[in-house]
Image 1: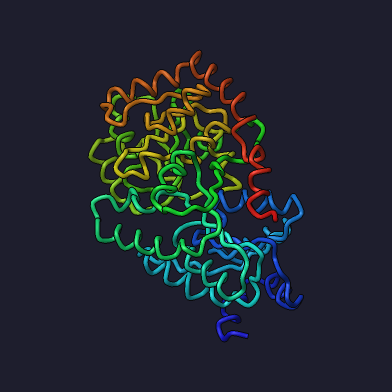
Image 2: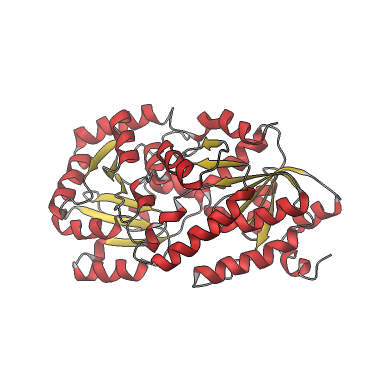
Length: 397
């Protein structure tokens, strides 16, 4: 046993029991450098596979509670302790160091790297154990939004990705525009599969969580953003809009480096009492919170090529909550708006007054009812279960 095992495995008796079973070969091992309780994409794929008879393990940031909860779903979590590093590089380095202690027990027929930063671990496991390697390119990592204006860092990431993808057997992307670009960028004649960032189907619920928790009066319209707090996600433009929409409050669910700028901008615009930083919410609880809002915001700014092609999961989570969305009219999101009529797409260059006007249209009683009915219809198509066959085909044969 590696010397590091005791330190890593002490938080999960379930993992220790799996070790004692001997040389178990999983059908699929996911590697995700994300807090597993917030990693919707990995959880949804893993649950789909398990429900269809596949054995699954996950190497990800997590704790004992996460391990016990997933074990009840027959998913084995090999958790890495989250030490809450401030710098992303330290977080990645720590994950690579700690994950290696699971190499002896994470034997699988298929390894799925759930992002670029997990790819190195997946490549190592493939070299040691064999099996197939699938790379889930959730973003265009060669053109990341947070690295806009940082060409040296972007070049290093692009070089890292190009070096490791030679070991990949199959690519997974979130939309057709991503596939089109990455086929040319990678120059690899290997199969691509599109798995959209859709939530599992959930029934409509009546929820007042946000209104009750923050004591919002009945006349307030609740705008919601959920996801990482990053530059280019449209958070700051919506804050600037609030002075033109006095009935609105803006609830922000998530964590990230933009937090201080959000606070400062809210104070500058004199709307800080109507901007609520709610923190992170576990993915399995998110639907209840989203359903208690009036309007979902996915106002992506095209600060990078990756953002220009964005089709974020929050858009579909708003739809599943039966609330309309305000989105920027970038190609992938506009296509969804045009097809399903579940919100309004406007230019990311819109003025604060124009954004406010679009939000007011969505909040209007008659309009909101129409959009809500459209969401009700769309969510029977835009759900993760509709992709079951595609997911099973990733690891079959």
